Length: 423
Image (cartoon, rainbow, N blue to C red; front, side, top):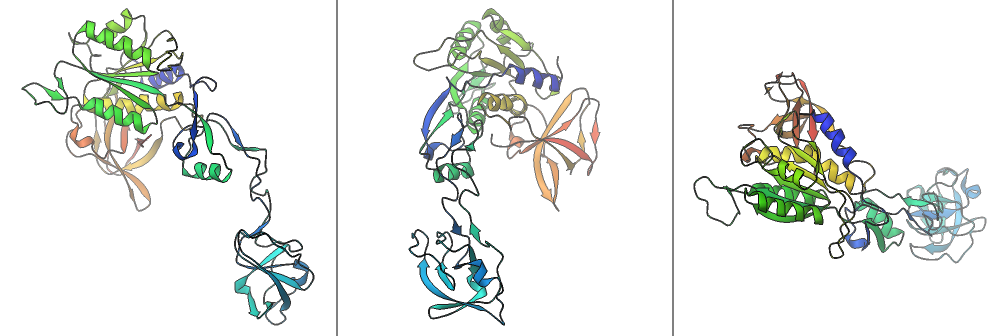
């Protein structure tokens, strides 16, 4: 049994990010949200494209207005009106000004903008009531970005702000990493689908739905392989198929030490190398992590030659979610090609409740973070913290972590939490 920190190190060392040459695709900007940029982007455009006004007011020559005041205003003749999108036609001469609006191009000869609140207009004349600073309210060409330099680096997630930048830079298509493919199946004779009536001893396979949602939220593509009965032949067939089509395989159940827990033996029969068989954590002790020899590229499914990574997750619902959040999610993020931000996010917060455990294993308690008077506070979910209790996992956004040897955290005491997010 390995420690949680050792398990994380082993798993992340096994993950090889997608290949920039082989594992990319071209997508339209409108559907690029949340994708991982595979190639750095440059633009032939300067930002701003030209000198422009940051304010509604008057474009002037600084030397004409540098001594202006309300008692002794400079008086300038207005020779042009320049709205946004209009190409100025005049060159501002001594004693002249142009009425200008936010975003409009600065006319030749002008070097400063006086905001309209500091002026008074009379017909075609403007009175400058306060001396501006040199070049005030002028956004200079290329002051934000210089054409030909790197605009966005590879390996970043494209969110709304990046999409806006790319649209402004007139990048209609982008090279992004393909979505990692994650095969998911559940094991157990007792499992039924959501539309089947339950008989005594049977339960609904909630794990497959939870894992599919988590995989989608992480930016990967779930491949649902259904429920597999506790039959070694059927399990071996499904595992072999999953390994052939996916970058990561997630199974739930069948990795403990019971008579019907076949997963580890089947992995060994398929020449897998098992790196982890159990982790010193609660819930989530029965966790298998294995790798397979590299798969050949499938001409239909376009599977890469990565060595697929196998996670044999526990069967209990809470344990499935905890182990996914703790180990699988960082692995998917690193695989996706993102260069930073794939590590788990830990915070030190205040505990609202008394938190207890036996201290024998690193313990994860689920609940919610609340912002109280500017300080984050962890509230443990009501009810049993049993690995089989799925109900009180709803609305979980954090896991409190009690290290080995720690049996009690008092209310208002500091506790480390794993902050959860939708990928």
